[in-house]
Image (cartoon, rainbow, N blue to C red; front, side):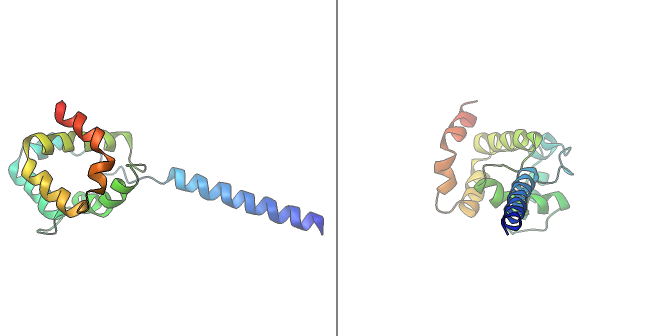
Length: 132
């Protein structure tokens, strides 16, 4: 009887370890990591298309839909599932919007952070991006 209990405990422990590993390995797709962010940020037309997608005011490209589908989770999880390239891209886009397109930044902030939760959570990072 003791051996059955030990086997059950080992199986349970293995299941917990496996589940934790899966959570650690879960990442957003890197399929769109090579999109030219500078081209988008320097084109009012392209930028507005993405913004309209995120604000539910227009259709979404496949990469825009992927961004929209994961944006809330990325904010909530501090981009835990983001690749390094996605984290760098996020900083680039936020810096551009905060410094050069504050009205767009405000619209996105109003939609994705109406209570100001993330504004407070990322206050230090936002200040650093605005100072650069």
